Image 1 (cartoon, rainbow, N blue to C red):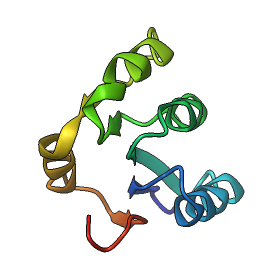
Image 2 (image 1 turned 30 degrees about the vertical axis):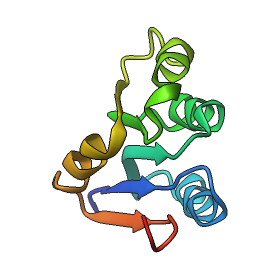
Image 3 (image 1 turned 180 degrees about the horizontal axis):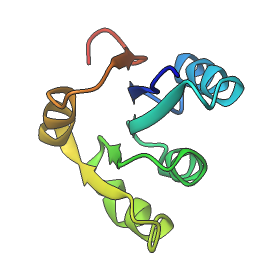
Amino acid sequence: MISKKSITIFGATGSVGGSTLSLVREHPDSFTIHTLTANRDYQGLAKLAREFKPAYAVIADESFYPLLSEALAGSGIKIATGAQALIEIAAQKVDLIVAAIVGVA
């Protein structure tokens, strides 16, 4: 039996993040989502977090934290915000990190 690969996706609500999540949907026995992040799309992030049930959902723009927190209330998903949270997530041990964000970020 092959163990599941854990994945963190930076930019989960964009096109590359969406393509990555499509692959995860097609192979649910092969992958588990550790963290999903988005810049400002808290609604898209909340929808994906409810579907994939990651340990963490991180919204880069701190002004959207209350909205994401409300959208994920009761889900058990840990919510974080801001640049420092993204740095901390990047340092966590996972099998794969998908950096589906603009190069400058």
